[in-house]
Amino acid sequence: MQDLAKTKINIKSPAKINLHLEVIGKREDGFHELAMIMQNIDLSDYLEFEINNEGLIKLESDCNDLSLSDDNLIVKSANLLREKLNIDYGTNIFLRKNIPIGAGLAGGSSNAAATLIGLNKLWDLNLDQETLCLLASTLGSDIPFFINGGIQLCFGRGEILEKIDSNFEYGVILLKNPNVSVSTAETYKKYSNRFCDQYLTDNDIIENIRKNLRDNGLNNLNFDNQNLSIKNDLQLVVENENDSVMQALYLLSKLENCLTFSMSGSGPTCFALFKDIETAKKEFTANYKLFRNKGYDSWVCTFLEKGITFI
Image (tube, rainbow, N blue to C red; front, side, top):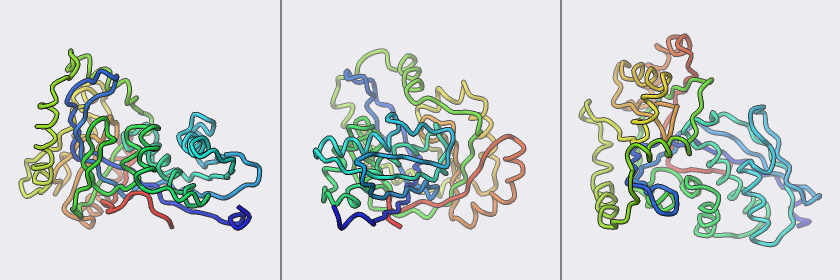
């Protein structure tokens, strides 16, 4: 521990978008059976970890809207490591927040995974990827994805992961009304009430949908056909209840050279894809004032091959 006293770790913690989100049905454990494709994007938070000698987890951030207490996923992740490994190491953590909160971009899940990876190195724990993923799955359904990141198929409640060997170079424009956030739990509950009147017990249905996504998921992402659309079942609920989502999707649909557009996760962030980052930047520059005048924060970014990275 003495050798680590002056160590500082800096980590880039990226957001994700959903290139496919299918709710297969409601499970008896209260979760939903999902089939998804998730992709990291270069809109990122940054975390700094430093050993402290007090044996405490201290979190600070430049974001005033974020709880820094035990309910924060960063603190939960640090405490989980201490509890599981029976250690009393401490750390000072600073979070520089860029990913909007409650946006369907999984910023909190990304930060949790970054904490597991960062403290694994800072505290010299030598946990392997499989162990980190198992720990991540106890904290939240999206968190295991970020341990490896990039682009992956995500099944079960999101914790069953299959890496896709592909590297897309699309550009992305994101739109989100800063005054609107959406509860993921509430959205799934509303979806359940409308579309899942019974528990899902047929494993053949689950396996067929998984196989179809494995076989055809990437084919659906080859945007030679301008009329392709991204499937997001939760959009069926959120779009009809949320004017900011409806308007964002409309604005994105009208952008020149837009290949396809969708809502990410449970929203309210919406995104459009373009053939490359140069095309996306051109459209972003041409429409930035329009986005702002309509009340949206906006970003332009690229796909990432990896999730959490050391910097």
